[in-house]
Image 1: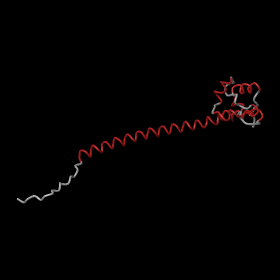
Image 2: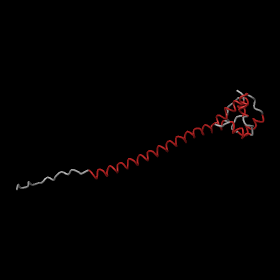
Image 3: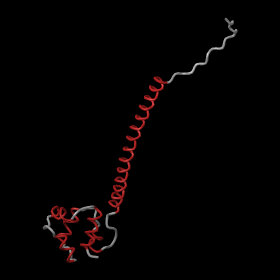
Image 4: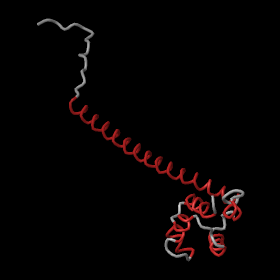
Length: 139
C-alpha cells in the first residue's frame, strides 16, 4: 500500500470527501482521485500541505506505513469523539422516550378524570335500608 492509499484510508476515517479536501489543500480538482487511480507517489510538496493541514496524522505512517495512523493523543480523542457521538444519539433517544412517557402519563390522568366524571354521573350507590331496632306496628 502506497502513501496515496494510506491517505485515502485516513480521510475515510475522518469522514472527509476528496473534492472539498483538494480545495482546502490548494490542489487541482480531481487530483487525489487521479493519484489513487494511477497509484502514484505523493510529492513532498503535497505531503507538506497534508501534514500542515492534519497535525494529528502520523507522517511516518503516511510515507512508509510504519506506526499508527494517528498520533497517540489524537487517536484517543477520535475514539472519545466517536463515543460521544454514540452518547449524543442515546441521549436523543432517551429524551424522546421521556417526552413520550410524559405524554402518556397526561393521557392516563385525563382518562382517569373522565372515568371519575362518568362514574359520578351514572353511578348511584346502593345504600342498604336502615334496620329498625323496633318492629313497626301493623296497621
